[in-house]
Amino acid sequence: MTSLHADPWSAPVAAGPIDATVAVPGSKSLSNRYLVLAALADGPSTLRSLLVSRDTRLMADALRALGVGVELGDDAVHVTPGELRGAVTVDCGLAGTVMRFLPPVAALADGPVRFTGDAEALVRPMGPLLRALRALDVRVDDEGEPGHLPFTVHGRGTVRGGSVDVDASGSSQFVSGLLLAAARFDQGLTLRHTGPTLPSLPHIEMTVDVMRAAGVVVDDSRPEIWHVEPGTVAGRDVQVEPDLSNAAPFLCAAMVAGGSVRVPGWPARTTQPGGLLPGILTRMGASATLDGDVLTVTGTGEVRGVDLDLRAAGELAPTIAALAALADSPTRLRGIAHLRGHETDRLAALAAEITRLGGQAEQTSDGLVITPRPLHGGTWRTYADHRMATAGALVGLRVPGVAVEDVATTAKTLPGFVDLWAGMLAGTTPAGATGPTA
Image (cartoon, rainbow, N blue to C red; front, side):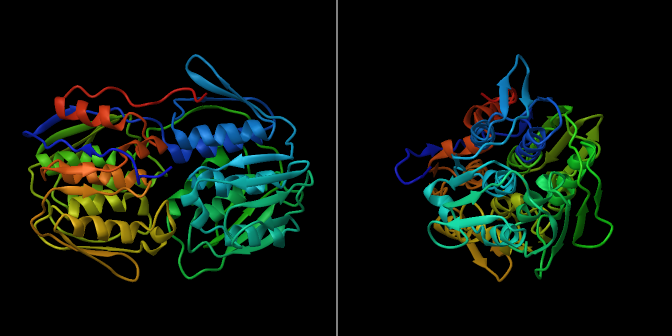
């Protein structure tokens, strides 16, 4: 996927305060974790309200290639585990969850599994995960630059397991990928993080939570050490939570334009990093209330700058950075150096695009400093990054003439974004793309 030749989308300017209810689709992070665990389970699983997006389709297609049954139902996805087979190729696209969750699964297959992906995916770091697999006696052959796609995992049907160290400073997905398959390893797994920082800890907590719900015994009582007992993974009937991070641009729209946006299905307890949004937006000048399962964010059009550590919720950074560019005072975002290894170098991309429209955004060693300046219209490049696209839409709510390049890249996690955005502005937002994944 690339944004180089896509027609730009004219981001609509809000004509006045917003009053809308936005039903966002299922969580991508949860959807792909549930798919992996269902593939490794001891029986069939039914996954309800699973996200329909490019990332989940890539995961479903990869699991089918490995011999897992993934079938469309009337209102759910049905997963039937099978003997994992090799001599196949997995297309990761630009999905970090596919490229980092499935190599440990492929090690359990009966032959070689080749991993490749989009051109943009070839620069995403994979080295810590591949080194960990090799330390577990799994053969992995690099085909290009070491520690990056493409590569081949030579499955032998079993993985010894035991103890392994991994530096997950670049991505918490290195930890989650190893943990998800660990119950199927002969000795289970004791995993120790050895790097200087551990970003996106809620995503690891999410992984542990869904594993425990599937009957896997996980001990995370020691900081940055996880022990998974060998054993079975239970097939389950699961309802997927809405994607709270995908709700972020809609909730922030109420702050930019004024008015209120409501998101139904908001969980009272969640491991999603997006669960931190109400507190963040309150600090930036909004009011946020949870009535039952409906979160309402109300804004006045005024946004306050903040000093914010986002290491636990880095995926919110593009949205918060766009909001900060429209604030009344500077914002400093910290703890997000790992975003340089996401779909694109998000720190460089955000600094470039805010600056392109007349703003001031400077990179630091671990984040951004954004100083509000009068903004003007222009092209907002997305770098094949879905969250860059939604950030551009948010800026365009206030700044006339913002043209978002390749807005279709939002299909990675939020298909139908343009219609959802237009519906929000009209107060008639359709439901998001939740349902079976073909």
